[in-house]
Amino acid sequence: QVQLVGSGGGLVQAGGSLRLSCAASGRIFSIDAMGWYRQTPGKQRELVATITSGGRTTYADSVKGRFTISRDNAKNTVYLQMNSLKPEDTAVYYCNAGTVVTSIGTYLEVWGQGTLVTVSS
Picture (spheres, rainbow, N blue to C red):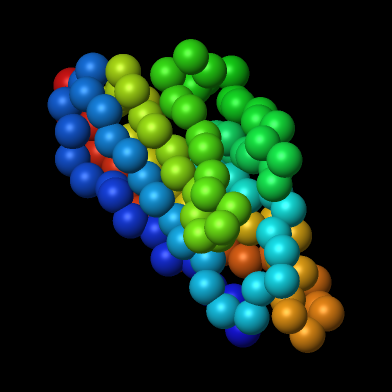
């Protein structure tokens, strides 16, 4: 019914920047919170940043001041601008739509397929 497709990952040197994008498509009426999470092998998936439909944001302490989350509600798309990247930012980044109200009145939580970000030292 609803899917998220992310893009923008890749390999970058420490200190560099990347921008991730994630677009939701399908039978969508509205989406409240959207966000980005990341995961490295052997560790739990962790929150990176979230943004509500009204623009309220939250960030993990480890990325505050370096990453910026934004969204285009008309396009059901969320972005993550990542600056001053560090090797410890290397992970698979997953986008999330926490509360999707579909056009048929159901509620869903949807995850994207993940995009790899590798930061070399």
